[in-house]
Structure formats: C-alpha cells, structure tokens
Image (cartoon, rainbow, N blue to C red; front, side):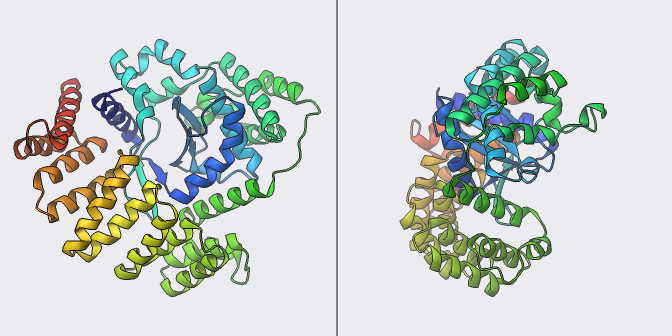
Amino acid sequence: MSRLARLAAICLLAMTMAAQAQSIIRDAEIEHGLQELAAPVLSAAGLPTSTRIIVVDDGSLNAFVVDPRHIFIHSGLLMRLDEPAQVQAIIAHEAAHIANGHFTRRAANAGNAGTVARLGLLLGAAAGIASGDASAGVGVALGTASSAQRVFFSHTRAEEASADAAAIDYMVSAGVDPNALLDVLDIFRGQEALSARRQDPYLLTHPLTRDRLRAIRARIGGLDTPGPDAATLYWYQRSLGKLTAFLRAPSWTLRRVGRNDTSEVARLRRAIAYHRQPETDLALSEVDSLIGMRPTDPYYHELRGQILYESRRYGPAVQAYARAVELAPREPLILAGYGRALLAGDTQSGNAQALEVLNRARARDPFNPRLLRDLALAHARLGQNGLASAATAERYALLARFEDAQIHANRASGLLPQGSPGWLRAQDVLGVAQRVLDER
C-alpha cells in the first residue's frame, strides 16, 4: 500500500471516529503489558504477535476489530475485568474475528456504512493508528464507533458462534482458562431486555443469546487450565494498575492501595496518583523506589521523565528520558517523550538533537499527531519552515482538520524542492484533503 493510501486510510478512519470525540490511549508501558498478555493467544490463533492491542478511552463496555492488525478494547471493559484470563478471552474472541475474516465479509456487504471507496480505505487502516496529546500523562488520539461504524462492526449470530468456538480453542492451546470467556459474557447478561440506547456497545455488535451461551458452556464442558503464570499476572496487574491510576481520581487510587503497601504495583499506582494531585516530590520518591527495584526497566525511567517534564523540571526530565531511550532505543513513544523534553530547553543543540530523536520516533510511529506537532516545532526552530509546514499538514490531516491540512500542505509545496521527501508528503496530504473535501 502506498503512503498516500495509508494516510488516506487513517484520515478517513479518524473522520468516522471523531463524531463522538472518544480517544485512544497511548502509553508504552500499558501497550507492552497488553502485548505480553496477547502474545500466546495471538500465536494460538495463527496471527502475528505484532497485532496491536489498542485501548479506547471510553467508559462503556466494548471491543472490536476493523482490520487484520489491531484489536480495540474500551478502557471501561478492561477496568471491569478481574483477572488476566478475562482480558485474554476478549483478545481471543476478537482474534477469532480476524482469523475467520469476518471484517472482510462485512466490508463486502456493508453498503449502509458508506461507499465502497470509503470502506476500502477504512480497511487500509492496518497501516497505523493516529495518536495524540496526553491526558493526565496518557497519550490520546481519535477513536470510537459512530452509528455507521456500528453497522460495519456488527457481527451475525453465525459469526459470533464461530468466533466463540475458535476463541475457546485458542485459549486452551495458549494455556488460558476458557471459563474466563463465560465470566466476560456474564458481565453483559441481563442487558438484552434494555433498549438499544441503554445497552453497552459490545452487546449491540456482539449479539448475546441463550443459544450462544449454551453452546459455549457445552464446548467448554469440563475444560480447565492452571491459573496464570507469574509473568502474565505481573503484566496484567501492572498494565491495569497504571491504566486505572491515570483514569480514576487520585483519591480513589490512594484509598485502594493505601500508603503503606510497598509492593511494586502499589508504588506505581501511588506515583501516578501523587503526580496527578500534584505532589511531585512524593511521586518521584515512589518512582525512584521502582527504579531501585528494576534499574533497567525503561518504562519506570520514562515515567520519571514524564513526571519531571510535566512538572517543568526539564533538565532532569531530559536525563531520565535519555536513560529510558538507552534501555529501549526502538520504542517510539519513549523516543517521542525524549524529543519533547529536549525541545523544552529551546537551545540550538537541544533542538537539533530533538529533531534527530523525533525523526527516529516518526520512522516507527508515523501516525502520531503529537509527535508531528513536536517535529514541526523542531523544524521551525532550526529554520526549516517548509518541513515544519509539511509536518503540520500531516498532523491536521490525521486530526481530520482537512482545510487546515490543505493550507499547510500548499505552503510546504511552495517552500520545498519539488520531488524532495517533504514535498512528496505534502502532495500526499493535498491528495487526501482534496478527496475528503470533495466528498463533503
């Protein structure tokens, strides 16, 4: 797929998702933890372990797929789950929809969800997911389901039955207790009697019937597996602990973990709660304890850098992020944070270093609006106004602000040498923006 097609896919996905203004949570540590949980299930499903688990910042209960490389789970659903096997059950079920090609068949028959061209571009969203600004330290971007997407995402009863059967097989193969699938579905029981307006989105797109539950119980029978291994339980507790600490009120977190619990996850949750109050010194004390426990963990150094940066202690933030990058040189979200901290000092050398770091991050995560904003700033400070306009144009396109994208892409086209990489990116944006604006 060409860069133009990839960009068009993401832009149209952003447009269809923007209606309800929900967001995607971006955090390197949470994403890593969920990938650890997903890996055995994805392998059992025959899917690449690079298939990404994306958390949608939405308190309702839902999970869905739109392409072969991403599984979306609402934060509200994640925070209702009590054990790692339940998270893995959600992933297994959605992985089954991918493995069985259900989203492809829906695209061929979902005329009510848009034109064939729009659907083709929507399915191209496998190229990447738009990501954006932080909310209480967790990066955010566009993402959720509109009424049109509900048509597109919805599954038939036959699809649900086949996905359930496959999910159970995946879980057993991966050593995950299949009874967790029933535990998840129990959350939705009783909602069938509610009006569609009051039902959670998951029930609207994944019909739950008595026959379906009966079939699952019959297939599971006496199947059982041991509980989660230590690593699975650890990453579940760490990822969900961090997610809840950022999304719940700090007072709620501190009541739950107490002030005397010295366990690792308790310290992580307290660090985030203190940071959000803000009580920076207490937050840093907890993070330093975490680093003492795991001195080579890049995510704890990243968290330290984030706390320092958001507390306007830019010099120490740069040092913390530099250590995180040293430990995880290929992690784009950590690289992006490092570049942002370098820009905060606004020195010639810092801006030049930031540009190099942000370009490395962009090479691994090209659809990150916040990164593109920082990249544009770095270019502008170094007198590279054409490249600054090109990056700004891409950022506006990813945020579905196509008039603004068109303005900056035209500006970049006039400033950059014809045929240069920045000029070509500006042409891509112009093509997408014009296409979208013509359809309005």
